[in-house]
Image 1 (cartoon, rainbow, N blue to C red):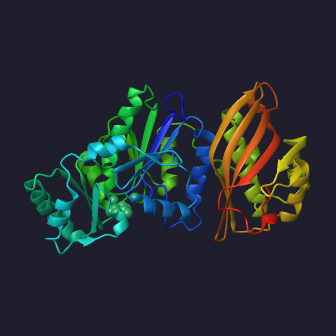
Image 2 (image 1 turned 90 degrees about the vertical axis):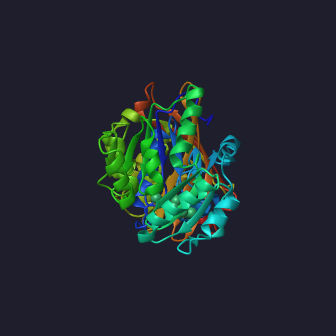
Image 3 (image 1 turned 90 degrees about the horizontal axis):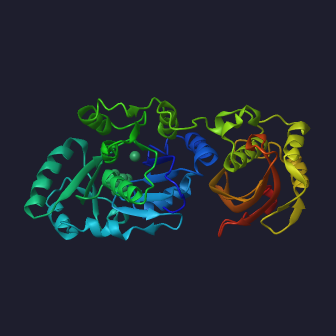
Length: 424
Ligand code: GLC
Ligand code: MG
């Protein structure tokens, strides 16, 4: 919450499964497009919020399977758990609030009366969320009968049906929408209400997000019937909500453009860095651009020419140094020359992305930039915490940066088995 001193320029609140994450895209291209856009153009002054139905256990599992960024705020278990930052510090005030008119034991007792309800796995049963599977054709009746029974027992609950199979019973104050409203209220009290908020979803438990006043909303092209139906019945005339024509994260990028919320060209959509317009240059942009070239070089997706390596050398300070995570220190120029032998060595397999880019200006023309640099190659995931010193080439940032110094250390537990394979 305290990462930004000013109101966020944009706050994106996105569902994960089938919204940010496309389970039908084994190459994760739309997610990687979004990641590059976010780190290049938004991370420094905007907020990323993930809002998922998953419990902390399944959320952490997804992060190991898909190249996802680290959000500023994580809302889990259908808006019943809110945590902050990379270390996921829980919001205890939210937990207190959800205890009102809620008794998990009574929910368990009453739901046993419905043989149609099949309890989900233990990990998905949370203090303020009880979850089942139920067939589409039985969902409506069960929901009606159950809410009557629970009301008679003095509880105030919310029953949500998602993905044509999941039935969640939550404390009435919970839900993705309520959790977002709670966050907005907190930001407002601090004088940091985001300039714009964009909510993104695909299924029933996301509907609430779209009913929060003043937010923009995108239902991705692959949205579920239950969400589209909710929209048709409740929000059809709201011009701030669109049904994208693109799937998942690409639909989110599409909405950023359609609502003019900021830059909407992912650096991944530009064939070469010279195509990049420099108007939005910031250290994050420079880092993303550099590692994109590096990925494309090793995938043989850019031209194999001495010229491109010379161009890369030209942005490195002649006596600049790279400290490899193994501890070996080499001139930056030598490291770039060494790339010559690695052209196309990871055809088809390598993906590179950066996460949590942050920068601090340390003198009139120098920036200290920190980020996590990830490589995914086949089944192997590797990450280095990276520090780079960048110097702007002229008074104006649009003239680009010179790389002065690079220092990497393995993220705990992520050391490369074959360290010679790790170039940058
Ligand atoms: C996620 C959760 C599940 C929940 C569903 C819909 O899949 O793991 O418990 O029912 O989202 O909210
Ligand atoms: Mg979803």
